Image (cartoon, rainbow, N blue to C red; front, side):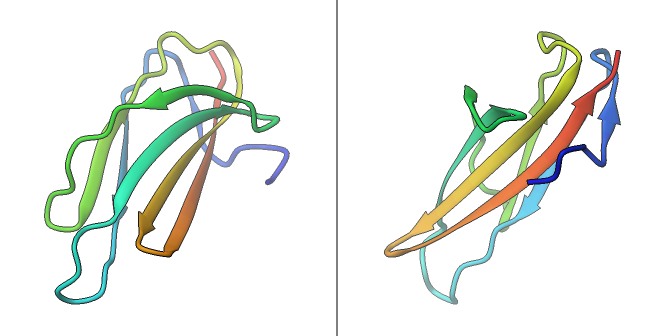
Length: 94
């Protein structure tokens, strides 16, 4: 993980996370979960996720309760024995 975040937001900003989720043709959609992590990787919260829509995951990331600092969203996808993680780093700056 990088020490800094590439994206910076104010606590009043509205942030929408959108990810494409791929599965083999004819396979069911993967099971997804998302976690908010502190800069050091500690889990802070489980993020509620809506159902996939046409292979796309889209959810709002609440920032208003976060303090100034660097955070990571980890989205974990699992399908059978296969799994994948996507990490999204960001900073709350004011």
